[in-house]
Image (cartoon, rainbow, N blue to C red; front, side):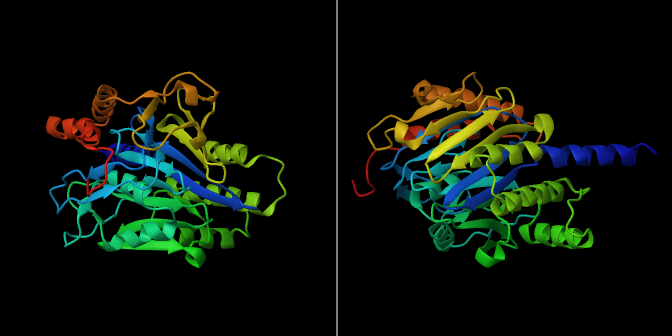
Length: 359
């Protein structure tokens, strides 16, 4: 019986590492980059191009009406549970949206707004918004479904240099931006709590870097310190390289499956994975993102280095089906998804068409 508390502590530390995603935004001398570590059960994933001009109707959530729209902007996304359900990405206007786990999240209760799932919400924003402010404004017209959803919060940034945290607390969207966002960094605690804990601890330590027992707060503090240092110093280190050094600093061993850096200013995306540590990159200019072009995809877990745009292949439902099956199988220790739901995820891209809603 005496061993039980130790086992519980070990389990909690494991869970803390497992869901330990980290994101940050750097804006220095007009050069803007966004970094993220994806820490999760599985590293399965594909990079997808998403076209502008696609008519879509949201997947049914069982928690309100669906919503239809035509994508205004093309995007590049990282997808694990199927195309159109990304974990994050950037659109051709430079808007970046990335998710992280947040216990304590409470999405809005059902109301007259249509509802979308937590992952499709990301694609909806990339399809329709060019700035952070436009994204925030969509809360008036669409909400995240409150039933059967994963507790998440988001860090978002755009090409104008704006950034914001998006959280859903007590059934309402809570935003930190501008003066309310002293550090554009987000991990796995509520943003206000992260700021409060690191500020108090840093003040008591005389400004010296310290370690925290809370995994999320420790990563938050380290990322804040490194972002702040880069902003202040005349560093000769290229911002992309420095961003990966931040991600390496806060990585959680084998739990960190992907490390991604979005070069917002130059519309390029860099990434590496746990199994393939060489940095790969792609530029928006390498792809045709207008209908009726064919969406392209790239398996993240393969050898390669540098510009890998030529290695992208045509997206197919068969590719999507295999990814969805592998990813849900690997995630079943945390959540179970019915065969019907899996099928909906892999078949959904077949429902979108190159046409306008009025056609």
